[in-house]
Length: 430
Ligand SMILES: *[C@@H]1O[C@H](CO)[C@@H](O)[C@H](O)[C@H]1NC(C)=O
Image (tube, rainbow, N blue to C red):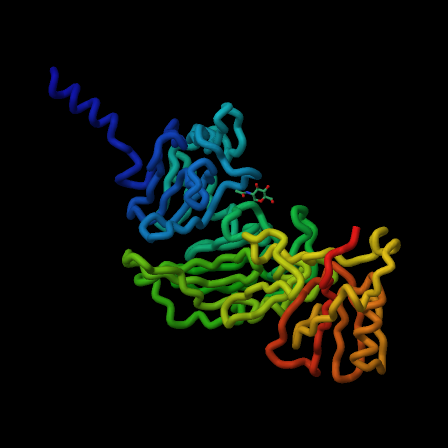
């Protein structure tokens, strides 16, 4: 009976998920087992462990596009810290259970005790199904920062941006429904407190929204309870799902962006920005609370499709690896005890550096009218609370203290606005 038993054994060893995308109960994936993932039947999507930025010791449980060069992650399990090697995910009759190397359960996607199989679908949705193939759980209902064609966002769900380009922790921006309208807001990270809304799709009050739809043709719209469709204000024409992958991602800098990527796998291909809201994130966010698109003390420059953040002269990035993480003065300003003791003349140690068309519009603490630019400069120089003055051609002098927020460079010169920044030119004498 040698031949049948070899046949039988090799049948058992066959990876059952390869043919159909289906995963049987009690299957496991382990971070120790490289290339261990569950693929969709087309091979286009994979579910499993993914290193973050080629750092093989930090991993996510994720779903990604497996056939394109950068293997874009479109979903990840919501866990507070990256996984270390030795972690494992198992499909049980209850659902998915993720354990750390110590065997502690750190994340689950569990339902009743009747999960019959899991399946990585060719849409990018990972589902847990019962014996009659109805879905008990689906990753599409727990989105992270990305929506795909055929996915919807219901009234109680939200998208959260990631923290930075390479950090998948939930970040500073959310896309969500409130009272039937769709909004973007900055949040009081890491809590759930929402600051001023900077983008909205308003449904009219008596026919409020039911969901945000990303349909199979690539159109994105809010569908009302009455069945009508309200666009986001971007143009949905010219889409071709057979040639391109599409995704809509709430980027870590707060823009909700629609991307395309050719399906044909050739190297050097990247995601293109097709459309986005709001049209200029640098000016769209104006909130008393929070830093704005860029971090504190920096200013935002809009470059046609995405923002960049700049530190003013005399300031540098708080975290050199995070352009959006804000800036700090190279030498601290302020009214510290050493300043009080100091007999230094401010003229000798500070300069007021001009910065054309840059403004931090909120958070003034003084408004001095009918001032000359020199008077404005002097007033800031001799005020230890003052970090910057905004001076305009109407002879208004606005004094601001740190931290500066909502900073932006105006493309059009708003009434000849100049920022004058106090910069320490000599180190402190201690
Ligand atoms: C992501 O950021 C959080 C908060 O700053 C930090 O605790 C975590 O270690 C970061 N993760 C990675 C992989 O750098």
